[in-house]
Length: 167
Image 1 (tube, one colour):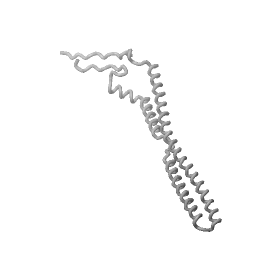
Image 2 (cartoon, rainbow, N blue to C red; image 1 turned 30 degrees about the horizontal axis):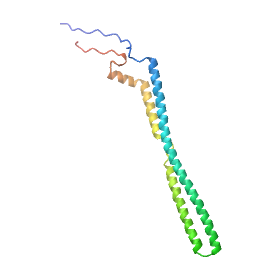
Image 3 (tube, rainbow, N blue to C red; image 1 turned 120 degrees about the vertical axis):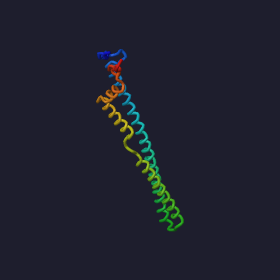
Image 4 (cartoon, one colour; image 1 turned 180 degrees about the vertical axis):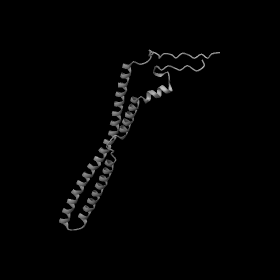
C-alpha cells in the first residue's frame, strides 16, 4: 500500500475578520494617544506630591521667620529694659522668653528643611514607565512580538495550518 502525502495548500487569502491596514494604524494611533495621556496623568500626580511637600516646607520656613522676628522684638525690648533698669529681674525674664522664641524658630526651620529635602525633583515612576513603554514599542517594531505569535499560533496572521502526518 502506498503512502498518500497531502498536497501543500496555497497561502490563504486574508479573512474578512482580519483588520485592514487603516484600522491597524488607527488602533495604533489611539493606543499611543491613550498611553501619552496616561503618562501625563502619572507625571501630574507625582509632581503634585512634591509640590505639596514644598508647600509644607515653605510654610515652616515662613513660621520660623515670623517667630524669629518676634524673637528679635523681644531681644530689642530686653536690651532696652536692661539699659533702663540695670537690674536682673525684668530684663532677665525678657531674655529667657527671647531665647525660647529663638529655640522654637530653630526647630521650625529644621522641620522645614527636612520637608524640603524629601523632594525628589523628578517623577521617577513616570520615567520608568516611559522607558518600559519605549522598550516595548521597539520590541514590537523589530518583529519579535509578531514572530512569537506566529510560533505559538501557526494559524495567526493568515499562515496555513500544517496537516497532521499520516492523514
